[in-house]
Length: 132
Image (cartoon, rainbow, N blue to C red; front, side):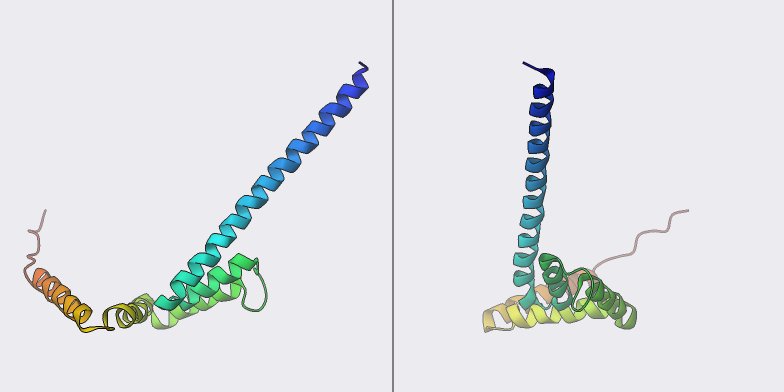
């Protein structure tokens, strides 16, 4: 065979390999976005509103503009700077408690026992001896 034909065959297979690798990487990205959308739907009822909006924006590829990843990240940063992280976590914690533990009496009793046990354990702690 002519060496030019082998060059064409080589170029064809190199192009085919590049296309297949590109499609494989595209599929990985799309699967990652689908997982982000599923995670967003799971955490939305638990009070993670900003994180849910962030995952939604990422899952559709909205990086700039209205309701984008950058805008939501700025909102998260502003809320952490304004109220502080403990206030943000407290708000989320109470949504979880209200959504899960406060629905029926048995769960409320379990929560109360867990809180009493934790409080007793914290009160029984002794500080370590100071080291030089």
